[in-house]
Length: 196
Ligand SMILES: C[S@@+](CC[C@H](N)C(=O)[O-])C[C@H]1O[C@@H](n2cnc3c(N)ncnc32)[C@H](O)[C@@H]1O
Image (cartoon, rainbow, N blue to C red; front, side):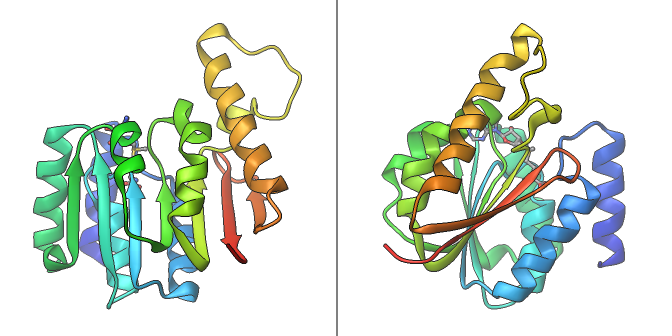
């Protein structure tokens, strides 16, 4: 990984930014490298550090991002500029729940890393927005180890657990899709769209 990017990731972590954890980040970048997408959608951009890494790996790709926090959008744009990838990016500032249904383009790669309680709500639109042969990479799908387990869940986490279980059910039972779930860190799923 680029040393400057490594440093920025360490700095963001030390400030408590919810950036993608190390092993999941490695898997993301490895997956982007092997798929070499031309169009990427990222839901939950934060400071743009995963976006930078994906664009450095897929050097002809364009990235569309959705982020609700204006300060993060400003920071992400600054980071895209720093790494010379800004011209290949477009960020929508706003709530993914409102923006996703309005997307008309299709994408080769979607990185879902936004509000964890809404993955199930987004699933149908995101699957529709994937090109055939495209990949949906989602973080936090095993949410704190609660997902798919009967163990007692603190009330504040129950809605997210339930939403993640619905999301995983959709992406593992839909015949158009092939999904692998990785039990690393907070859980990652990688879904390929085989046909419409
Ligand atoms: C886990 S962080 C994203 C990390 C980033 N993908 C990375 O790997 O560096 C989640 C981001 O989603 C944003 N977010 C939360 N709710 C959102 C919503 N409803 N719509 C769009 N973005 C949202 C947060 O502000 C936060 O920056």
